[in-house]
Image (cartoon, rainbow, N blue to C red; front, top):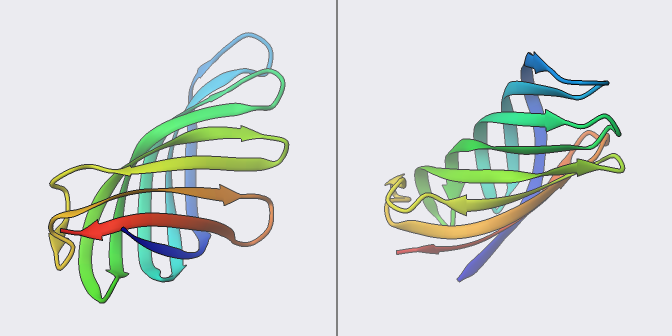
Length: 131
């Protein structure tokens, strides 16, 4: 497997509460568009649900469409992305949905991680194989 590393930045964030829970807890739906730079370059749009807890932490899960270039190939693929937010840091794990690759990324497999803080950019590592 090859490894792609880079940075991500939030281009847009649209989040809506669909259920208020006791205290400050709530359930939300969010659509986020990220710009990706580095060995994986392009754009990712993530649709997710989030559970905020009264202590300010959160857990989230969703589906992300990634469109761009990696390893000299161009196309798109879908990942399941889930994770946690605590202590000012959002940490997520990605898993490519098998068979979701298009164009030059048909047959792509892989998984990765990302970390985002209040800083303008987050970081990611993505281990992948191009069929």
